[in-house]
Image (tube, rainbow, N blue to C red; front, side, top):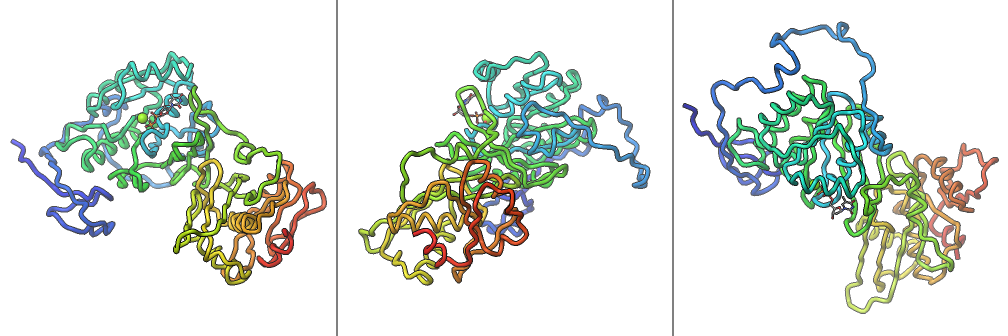
Amino acid sequence: MSKTKTAFFCSNCGQESAKWVGKCPSCEEWNTFIEEVIVRGTEKPLSEWKEYSGLSGGIKTISLQEVTSGEEKRIITEDAELNRVLGGGIVLGSIVLIAGEPGIGKSTLFLQASLQLKETVVLYISGEESEQQIKMRADRLGIESEKFFLLTETNTQTLFKEIKRLKPQLVIVDSVQTLQSPYVESAPGSVSQIRESASEFQRFAKETNTPVFLIGHITKDGNIAGPKILEHMVDTVLQFEGDRNYAYRILRTLKNRFGSTSELGIYEMTGEGMRQVNNPSEILITQKEEQLSGVAIAATMEGIRPLLIEVQALVTQSVYGTPQRTNSGFDLRRLQLLLAVLEKRGGFHFGVKDVFINIAGGIKVEDPSIDLSVLSALLSSYEDIAIPMLTCFAGEVGLSGEIRAVNRIEQRIAEAEKLGFEKIIVSKYNVRGIGKSKMNIEVVPLGKVEELYKYLF
Ligand code: TYD
Ligand code: MG
């Protein structure tokens, strides 16, 4: 007879402990430990897929030279953005975690991508939606596929039984939080349950060379709810993000054993599913007739893709004692730093002004090269003078008001030129070695914030 065993798990990082502790020794979060029942039978039966793969149980060490390398085989999907984010298609035998907030569009994106794979047998395991709901969604997407199979089951061993019968070439699990392994007693969604179910799928993926996608919900603060532990278990971690009030979604690589992590895919959520956005810059810049003050265009990089984004600033007289600093899409501390630089180096009195910053499209920008356009938008709104149209900016601003060089400047300039901009303002330390001869755009090198002010107004 098996004995009931319990253990305590940190709901943030998955750290296990025999007793309850107040502060997690691993991630240092407070009050995150919860008790979960785990029953470990003395002997674990063989997992269901063992026979399917025809593996013998023999274990032996081999020398690295004996291992045949060869290119990894990949399934190329119809979705070019997804292929790129994965480093060039889905690697056979890989296990991929897709994390995103509930309602952001994970199920839609992967249902769409797998329905488009007409030549691949796909098994879509849904623990969240019924067959009818998925059918309705597929109808809405307007794609049909004969090789797409559905399973609304959550018990992992029952799943493997079905998998053994169907022999899918791609397995999608929506979501990992609904899986339930019979070897662990605790409820679905608990740390020990997620860990066990995911590791069963991980071994399945490796031993049968079938790619597996695990969809997982993350909490508001960006933690992959509880199972941060999954991050090191899987080959690739993709994050699907975006502001739910806007239509744009970004698929970002956080970890990839088969490609670069600076890749990024951009989608637009439409009534008929996700649309790939091939030319994001054109949408992120509003087309306007008249010149408005407080608007500046930034030539940023998202991963390795250039992206031109509109920055809007509003500077108004403060009514209350404490001036307001409100921003969306830009780091608040970075904004305070830029305001301090303007206060100290330029003699502007932002201390008595309310300041609002907005990055168009609900996109969060981390690239420091956006500094220069935020600063220009602030100045433009402060002076109420519009920045000339067809001018854009790429530069970081330092504490002493110097304009600093940014990476991949040629790519930024080329993108601005492609979109018909006439001028790009950059750091003077950036222009060395740029071949200006064949350019259709004027590159304006500046060294200090004071020079920028003189140049613009
Ligand atoms: P969903 O894929 O269910 O999100 P997740 O799996 O990440 O929780 O997407 C839910 C939202 O997407 C829902 O509010 C409806 C919307 N939606 C569209 O806008 N267009 C569509 O074609 C579909 C299928 C959904
Ligand atoms: Mg979903």
